[in-house]
Image (cartoon, rainbow over all chains, first blue to last red; front, side, top):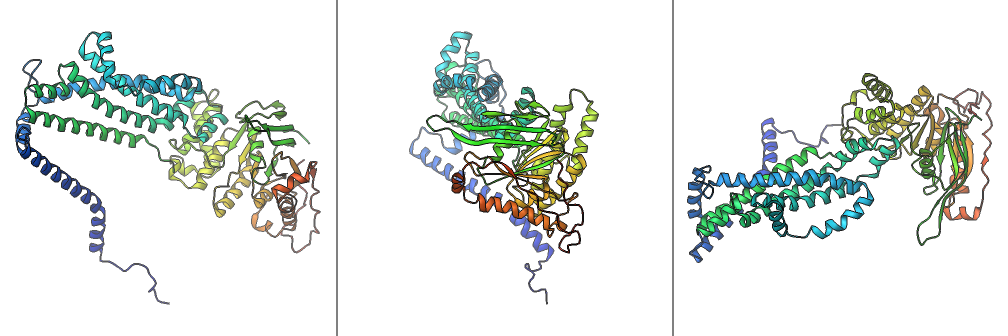
Length: 280
Length: 300
């Protein structure tokens, strides 16, 4: 018998390597080309709109304004005139504090709701009632409670970011596979060990989903909250530029808000992937 | 018979609102001696896993008592370790950590950390997985995962090892390999084992006695077959051993002729538990017999 049944034809090593390289690069190359094409269409449409509506800044005007703006993002001419960098950082600080407090309270609360049916039955209707409320509706209460604009904005962030964390954590705890709980029962593990060694790792992916949703919402809400409360922050800056009728700066602010939101999302996705265990 | 595990008049009834009560098990009486290997076999839905869960303490019987070492079983406890069908390893812990979790719980209060680690390593060594101790469950094969599950159960030195179709999810060759390992481990550790299975060959190969359950609902013990095959047992030699074949035939007869059709079981009515007489020992010089050892080794 000859070996003619051998399945693959021998390839020259160089050609094989090239082939493998192409196979590896092609998907990312394709998505890059897709993104570039998408942005090209977007800019083209924008250009058309700006030609039709003279008040609307064209892409090139916006670009030049952005270059000027980002040449010195961290200048400080008093409380009402700060560089865009300071404004973004101020917003991020508020989101960080509000979101951090929400995580500190929301995740343990979700744990208790998921683990103890009675707590879940008590809290679930209240959460369902409050969750659909726009966080801005809570802003006056924040002003009343804290008598200052900055903590009130943080309060709105706290309120909007607590719900996804509570709900996802509770759902995650309730959905821990029975197998894992049976192991815990058969081994007679203490409640503390069950929490730290079984429930927490099993629920972590759900918690991170909640965290991701929360930070997304928080970043949406901070812009609106700052428009109302004033001070320093990207939301207030955007509104201020509207009052100054610098429309190109509004467009820049939109891109900056989008970019920061995207970065937050990507960072958390990375974190989530790091902590998500694979079943098989 | 020395009673080690004792099940007396156990009945399990499930009641759901708006439905007539469902009798899963009735009149279960069974004693297991120390060091004995008992298999529970029956068609699916016959309540064999329910019975195992009752012994494990994961469920409480509606009536009747279960005793382990003369103490009533009132909940799960480390004196009865369970090997689950789907291995149930925690996927975020390494093999070592999975076993250590159990060891720590049982011996953590009385023994040093060094000793706990030693116990964990010894258990993994027993199932031949020392080399894989730092791997995560997803990095090892299904058979290896099940071996970690067995190591976890054995590491806590249980009085009784409970196995719920431990090899059911494995392919035939892996299953055979693990059965051989289990034979060796059980011989080494002199463990008392109660195993649920639906595999006739597995039951005959491993067991001292095979408890055959009638079809559900209201399943009970239909017959108990002693397996007087000498140990150590070798699957290749046993394959043509007349007594092995006779035991196998008895179980097949029970499962497929007497209780083959689940509907027919209800008409069969109350079957009093009976011990099927062990197949008579064959002449020692029978050429068909692969093993020339004394036949009756039933540990009673």
